[in-house]
Length: 319
Image (cartoon, rainbow, N blue to C red; front, side, top):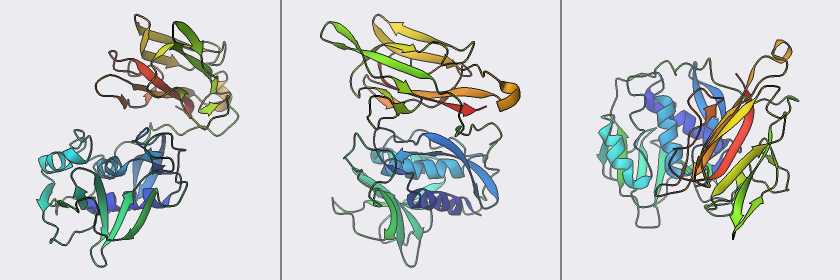
């Protein structure tokens, strides 16, 4: 399969899988899986995306194991799409009179990005508005229209500005990257870490409800500990819930939590195999965002070690 065919197939599969929904909170999915596309394996994070990050991600996945892997990392939102994609050398900017091909992107540079699935008829795949707006979404597609495949339409808010057309016609799909070390989330009876975070209410430190992995014991559907926009001042784990010799470290700047490292010690690896903590954090500051997933202490922990954290998401996966 050509690279554009792989990207289109991945994006279509994302849009047709109800585990994928629209959200600006998550933006880059959550739980890693390995997908087989065209006889090759690709790493995919299942969860919520917004319109542009879903398209960027489908293409980034297609580029795994090729010389162009990582060339789209500068993408932030629809306003940067033309610059980043054309800057890779794999795309050209074309007017809307051009007949888009599979994998091409229809772009409204202020608001939206969708992907072409077929030229005739002109079919699009796209991530649209979420179930509760841009924030507070339940992970996954609640309506069937958070992410879906449908016929071409004229974008209502100013129309489409142009098409990012894939021009790497001789570029075949790569190896798909090394997926041997990609964790798969546990669905067994392994005890999940129990943890909670604290925020300030006036001059008083208040502990929020306990999390059991991705489950909020307080009854909400949140998969993270914290309150969006409220800085975390402390975090704690229930004794023993990180395994017999598990540990965590807090990176503090004054009374602000700015980083976190978690290590899970598997109680009985001879019977279950090894497990590891899989976690990520969201930070505040001038450029609030979710960081990438970390696995135990392999990459020095989570956080940018500068801005205060407001959300922590953590579970256990197979090593």
